[in-house]
Structure formats: C-alpha cells, structure tokens
Length: 114
Image 1: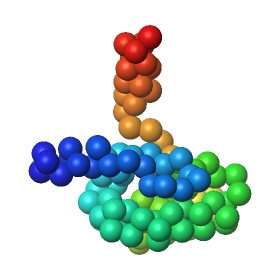
Image 2 (image 1 turned 180 degrees about the horizontal axis):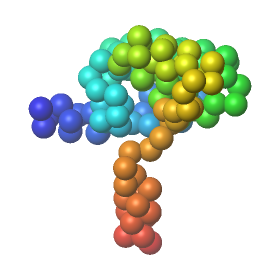
Image 3 (image 1 turned 45 degrees about the vertical axis):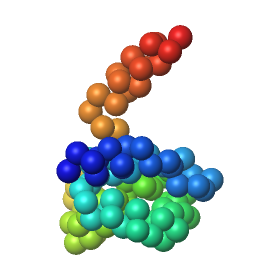
Image 4 (image 1 turned 135 degrees about the vertical axis):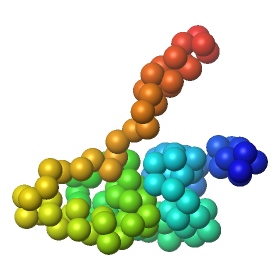
C-alpha cells in the first residue's frame, strides 16, 4: 500500500486548464473508486468536472471536482443528497472542503522555504 500512496503523491497534476487537487487527496477524501477512475481515464475525469462546472456556473473547480469524486464514489448517495438539497430538506454539503489541517500544513510548509 505504501508504494501506491507514494506514486499517487508524486504524480503530476493532469495537464489541463483546471487546477485540480492531487490524486492522493481524491483517495483520502473519496476512496479508491474515483481515484482509479481519475488515473485510468484522465480526460473523462476532466470532462466530468467541466460538465459539472457548466451546469453549476458558480461552482469553483474544487467544488466541481469534489462533486465528481463523490458521485464516482457513491452515485446513489450523491444523487439523493442533491435531490434533498434541491427540495430544501437537507443542508447544502460542501464537497469542495479541504482535508483537515491542509491549510495549516501548507502555511507551515511555506514558512520553511523563506
């Protein structure tokens, strides 16, 4: 498992005009299914993100990516949540959230390079 995580952390971002969070974050937040989809079909993955952004004009790239990852991980759960959100029966869930401690790590990481 450790070599796979190392490979995922070292993979460069997919070449596109989108700024995506790294594959390791997809794995940690949403599990193996969206991660495998992302790595095995990068163009299809980016297409799904662009389609989500086209349908949801105010969505950030991170929010669109999070929704795509959540959908790929559990389509039935994601669809039910969106349906309930649309009816006002459920609070909006932010799929664009960051990993716990991500901001503190990146800010402490930047101070070491100054």
